[in-house]
Image 1: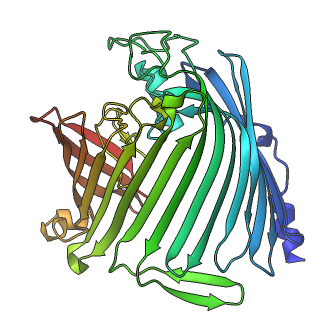
Image 2: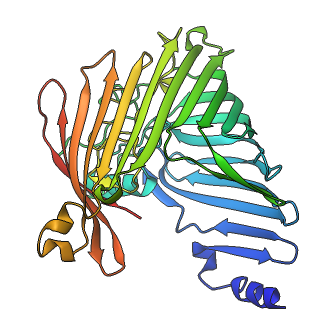
Image 3: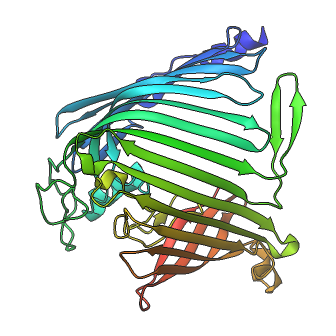
Length: 412
């Protein structure tokens, strides 16, 4: 009865639901349906103009086996390019022991060329509307993809994905300016030729892609219950990632390629001196001299002054495509959060409960001089329980010191 009461409250339809979204759940039959609202999915870019995005989800859970399956769909319409785009798929957790997942998806999407998704859509909206900066660079991806992942044995998880894609370059369809800025204005949708409007960043093509990855957690312990296996990672060892990616069967032969990559990340507790975190990555391309820009190794840069997450493998002031490469690369990210070890010793300041964070982020590619950022920041800014603000000062070095800048972010 109490489940019926809770469902009745949650499922009650509101007059604002057509704008902000609606969800319905049945706790007895363990399913949930949701549709997002057009207000939350409203964005702007110079390729689609104003565009509206709607998400549909249906999830059915099996309480006895602690598994689920999910149907999802993403729909969008661009007002300026007058195009509908629809994609969707199916995902299922097959068991809760080895955590075997399978997913099948397909459709067409306007996708960021930089596949690290460095630019949140709301940040891009603000950059376009207030500052006349169109950092988001898109292409059309018509695709079908199947993925599978499973923990093959304790501490070793395997990931695989096979896809077929047709990629088409996109171009700006609007140059509408909301607020005039004396900064050179909008650039083209080709990140390699920002002033060559109408130029394509790659040739339209089809390609198949195979991705094989493994995650290794050393000396991992676990709890084994009837409803599942629950892992406990050992913080004394780094998490190791190994990966292989192959592009093949392209109708443009030189777009085929091979890529191997490795990464390791860890957070070390230094007791009262805070936490030290690092993320190391490296990769090597083969037979990739003339591949599509889409398949380059891109890096998570930032040309705004906003950080909306604490992802360690990112750069604060690196342009989104300045170091993209189809050759060898290596990057290192290091941050130390002193918590209260330094600021907590300063009279007066120690009452504010601020935390100091220092960091260094380095990138090496064959085409450029080594790039490094050094940063110092204050975290846990705010009042009372609302302490989710962070401010960093970042200074880059690449063959000489470059202009520094303050970064403003959220830290949850």
